[in-house]
Length: 303
Image (cartoon, rainbow, N blue to C red; front, side, top):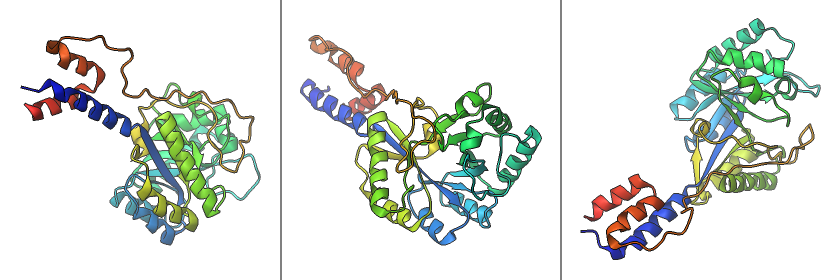
């Protein structure tokens, strides 16, 4: 028979275990397909590090295939028009494009980036802030089993309202790791992503295959706090979506930031104090305060 004096230790251990994995951190490395030497270093990192491949990059297909073979999640890093004037990738989406043209570009991107399960925007402040433009994107993505990771290059992105009425699920980037390629700044951004994950339950950080970014990841990934779990973006699709403006690093939001209103998931805690109960009800009381399946495993082990 289970000894009742062991129950406090069991409860304490299980509650600590539940809290210990409260924070989930997803890291996506953009712009894959141009720097094979640095990108291969990323592929040597834990498979939970995901990669976003530019569909018209010279090594797009090869790097997407290598990433998949190494166990990494692959996204299409689709070029979208920015508000600023700068050189654009081939087949950059613009709000003025027809649905037919957007469908063609996305279809070609899917063909060029095998094994993709999601899509995120490369640049795109002009495109993602256009509801009409993003509705055409989401309607096209509705034909694929893709999620959309909004890189949040502008605060008033329309990706969420544009996805309404489709099967496309939307995630949001919280931190850019390397707006500045200074190694100290990258470390600070990595730490910020970890703190956001600890505070809010999860966070998504985006970086690029720059040498200093790769170096920081190589140094800091092995030292992640015990309460942080590294995950793929697809593992966050059922999490409550954070609202508000993501952390921009050294690059301010293009539009006026809004005040964040976070809804962190609750930790494993008892909502109200439990009244004393007879020993015959001790097990049911414990069952109210901890995860039932985990408790069952321990009880079976102790009988």
